[in-house]
Length: 381
Ligand code: SF4
Image (cartoon, rainbow, N blue to C red; front, side, top):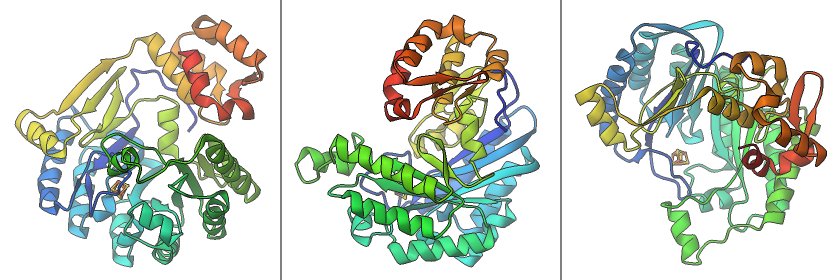
């Protein structure tokens, strides 16, 4: 589904933010509440109201249940979530339905519930198999729990992605390589590797300010990233985006829609949709979002209309996150503008410096360019 659609096309993707977790991990700055499960039913009431505000029903190709932790919902609550969504959306043939899951939540009955609402892809928040590193990250599972969760999910659903974090405090390259090897030996269909980020407002940030935690240095982070690329590629998980690796046919179709900058609906606190050329971001606070939806039918905190040019530039920048890059003819047709007229001179300069390459049909980052992808994006902006 690597197809570009114009910004006024009906969205064919839906993101739902489920803002509940058992506890908040020290590095996490997502919009969520921890230990307040009595809010889950009111959240579903508000979600129903938000979904009902759509003027009609839509057929979609991808649905992503993210968070937070969708797997924190009870089986009854998951069934209701499915009813709410499928009263507004129907799944196209072959649609991808992903659910983010915490390894500690995985059981046969949870997987049955997920399958009964159409889930056919699990994104498992493993982060590491090393119990010491998991402790530092304040995760509530250990390596054995993660392996068991993966096996159960693979047995039931057969399409399981794992998230892994690198550059945790005091982590070494050999420790990271061990995590990669353990993950790869389990044969996931997809792997996402993320460098630990230090977000203001998290307990990790505060502990770093007090000198209790150290972030790793730039060279170490580059070595870890390169180790992920080397290990995954040699195990048949091809890199198709800056942080994403997949076996054949298992690329995340939902995330591809973000990188193609096609339209999508989004529901829940902090969720950002892109429809009809406008990016709408909901209020981040789960309780404020609920109150506003139930009172006014909308909890949009920020509406940002993108001009055609702004949308085309975003398409270019996000598209270059994909290893395949931009498919030039499709990009130009959907954007209504040529690459040359948008940023032709900057592209020529970046090609001259060996950071971009252009084939007859594609424009993409070179391997050197991928190492400095953020700096290339700034130049294109
Ligand atoms: S489980 Fe995930 S979403 Fe929940 S607090 Fe931890 S990192 Fe954040």
